[in-house]
Amino acid sequence: MPAPPEEALSAGNVMLTGPDGAQINAYQALPGGDGPFAGVLVIHHLPGWDSGTKEITRRFAARGYNAICPNLYARQGLDVDPDDAAAAAREAGGIPDEQFVGDAGAAIDALRALPTANGKVGVIGYCSGGRHAFLTAVSLPVDAAVDCYGAFVVGTVPEGFPLKVTALVDRTPQLVCPVLGLFGNDDQFPSPEQVNELEQALKDAGKTYEFVRYDGAGHAFFSVDRPAYRPEAADDGWRRIFEWYGRYLAGG
Image (cartoon, rainbow, N blue to C red):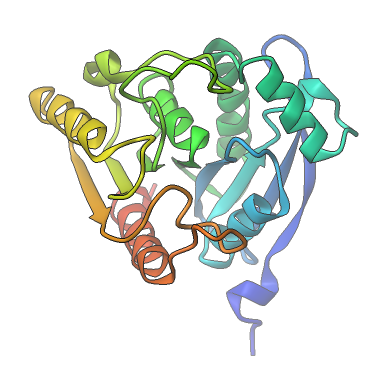
């Protein structure tokens, strides 16, 4: 009897090369079997390339996806403690958009180059990674995107906030794929009003999207190791994520 998917997966660190020649470590998780499998680019949250995000990466592999999560803070040091790297990145105002797009492109290329790939790639991100998922979807050739409470896709960064980024909503017409958005109604970044603004931009641009808003949930409701975790919202969100990817990433 073959092993269940969650037992047959393999996972470990791989190296990518950014467009600037920088070496980027990434966590890759692959299902067992010959495929073909769709790929998922997992983008970590502002706290960094941590164990929780790697667990999410393995979760996709257990469901039959090739998954990779690049360390966006690799330039802060490949061997630096993730918390220290995240602190250094925040001190610098976050990751420049151009640098992120280059690193994301390298990860997408790596997914499509896998011998078990079906050629389709989705992207998902949480917190600042939700904004990065939207940035990916307006910048690179991907087939489906999931924005989990991405801050500052719309709106402005308040003074003193540890990110120096600009809104992306004006780039909505450049969106290349369907977008699923999962948001908490108690969140401030993005607030319900900002989610409404983004939804209106998607409507105006004629884009395919689905937004789900959860009462009683705020920012980081997927994070199982944080007080913000909301099991009901997270469970429903995961169900919707896999339905979304099943709809748009199946086949070759």
